[in-house]
Amino acid sequence: MRRLFALMLAATVLSCAGATPGYSEPESGASSGAWSLEVTDAWGAPLSTFLHRGRTYVLGQAGERYRLRVRNSSGRRVEAVVSVDGRDAIDGKLAGFEKRGYVIEPYGEVLIDGFRLSMAKVATFRFSSVADSYAARMGNARNVGVIGVAIFPERPLPPPPVYREPRPWLDDEDYGQAERSGPQRSESRKRSASADAAPPAAAPSAGAGRAAPREQADERSRDAERPGLGTEFGERRHSRVTSVSFERARLRPDRVLTLRYNDEPGLIALGIDLDPHHPDDDDTWRRETARPFRNHSKSFASPPAGWAP
Image (cartoon, rainbow, N blue to C red):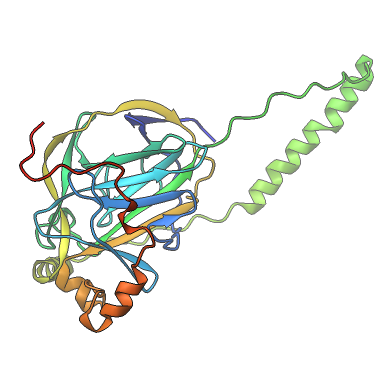
């Protein structure tokens, strides 16, 4: 596998690798194995999160700036390819596993502030209406409301060479026969096998992958009327990166972390209880949250109101 170059943001890096057309990784939640994805506010505090039918949902508010925190609790560097509303967080185009990503050091984390504009700037992530989202403005809001991170561990370094005893000497005639009978025959078999295995190339169909102008106009009209939240292309913000090299262990990600977001009416419509504490359950709630040493949290005296040192 060829060595590829990436960009580094503090303990973070951007890289690229070969594409995997037609491959779709199943959703694995916001936390899986040694990796996790979290949505925070502008100061790094986690936003309200709810688990519902095996999925993770984040409660957002229109106009609120947010950031993505990706943690790597493994002992290897990993590359995190980030998708927001189906758009790649680095080049802004449709997301794919072949895109560059943020590389995170072992037992490290990274806070991603927005869509990358350059090596020094990003456009912040900010909740908006679907019509004002970056995806809708770029012509396709089909995947608004979902954030994904594909995790690619780094390819381990090759083991050191193993010393082998030298083979017995061959005279010129024996050496020539060995060369003719071994590698040449092996190479010819490889060439014929690869020729037999190569599938015929499919002819591209005319207009494949293109939507008719009328269909595009209808979709934009539907996007303008959709309720709920999307992510807009926010204001410019400083976020410098540098270039590093990174080589993926595999073309396919080991995990795809996924979470979904919406506003309060959208989450309620899904059946998510945003206030799990009800008066009818008051006694149960009190019992379940009772602690044996509730006053053990502070080690020193608290100053009274108005006290000045």
